[in-house]
Image 1 (tube, rainbow, N blue to C red):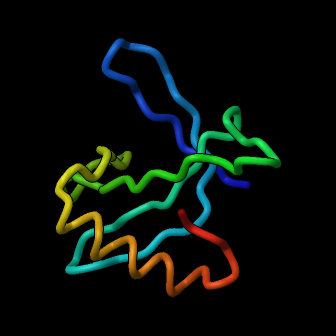
Image 2 (image 1 turned 90 degrees about the vertical axis):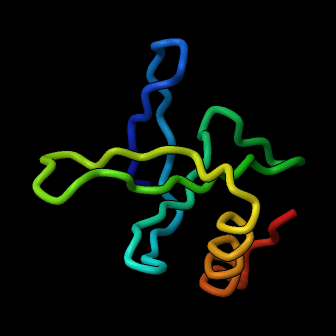
Length: 88
């Protein structure tokens, strides 16, 4: 599984596994999980990250999607892409 390193607010680095990626409204989104939280009984928490990097940036800059309307819209796209995965 491909991973992405995310700088946490407290300065720590968080590594997420990338489940899927998509582009909605000209913006790139990643559906990621924390591999350390993976639990066979409860599964793993999934997060949606939004690329806010500017054209010409060498690396992507991602933030957690916090807007409920945006989250719901992108969530539905990922849900359709990954029909065989049970999202809760």
